[in-house]
Image (cartoon, rainbow, N blue to C red; front, side, top):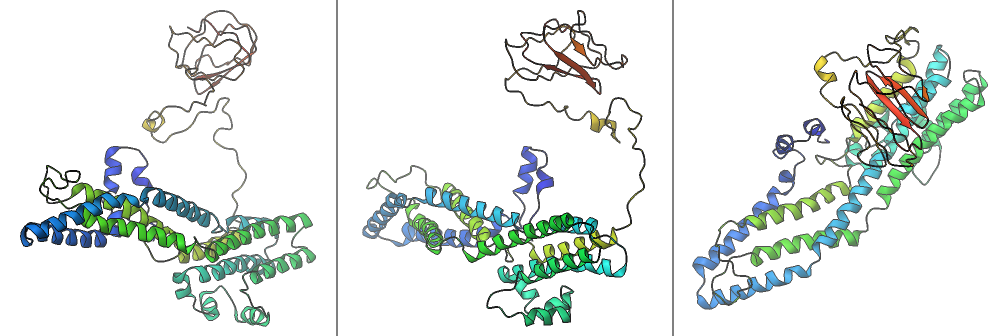
Length: 449
């Protein structure tokens, strides 16, 4: 359900961002088109009524109403209320996503600390991961109507493979007046202790590390459940909802074009039948509040809501693959392709890719300290400069002068020829034809030509 568009805007540009304006699913157009159509309909009705159906006396009354709505609509502090509300909701939405719980770390620890390929050991690893996924599914069932529809009862967990009949009996035997989110994690901890006693886990430290990963996973689910239990205060949500809608309703009358000079402060010399600026304001204000309303509870079926069912299935599948399918399928140890290289050079399958972007330059505290030097330029540093400076030089650039206080000079003269002069400690090395100069407390570095 989440609408992805990141690849379309991977490179910033007018055309790339213009393309996403025409997307429909998850767009501002889809979220507001019904309200905008209704607003334009009533705006047109009042405009036609004023132009063709009212007499002069009735027009005067209508103009007074328009002036009242226009002048007093600013009494609603909409910008402040809406901006603060949207910021709060987006921040809360991102925190809830960060508490989702990715099972990968738990599975990796279990896979490498529960040792053995016999059937009992495999069952220990698989059951631990399945219990962790079950705990997540139990929490999601209580926060997401979509997951609740998929798992209306515990029998649905059995049908989906998250739970067995015996485990359901064990769960039912535990009497609690609260939700039993903790119970599958309790089972997982118990399996770890049994594996330690039978020797499938080699140390107490390994048990501690695995339990720490499961504790972090469970803590994230607890925060997620708490965020749903304590939502944004209802009164604040009501205030924002009413403020935006009332402001837009006042705009139906307050943005009407009126004739005459009785209300010169609202009279416009241009009589445009379509209120373009009012439509833009409608899109911006209502679009913001629609985003906030959608993110207020992101566990439903909206276009940008979290795909909870997919996430539950993904965690169970990936977890089982890590702790079972990947065991014993590690590649043999061998030398990499850079084994004999004295200087590391990146490999690109396409030569154009290697030259398509500038090389990375680390940040400096003082601007203009990085210079791409030619044969005639020189670099001078400010006095008592206490930092490291990195300078990129073209392949084959030469230093004039004699060697002084140089350490680790490059030996591949086909790549770069270096001679230098300095009055401070200096280290020079190469990286693919480029030179990194590190100067500490240098008064100056002259005659780089």
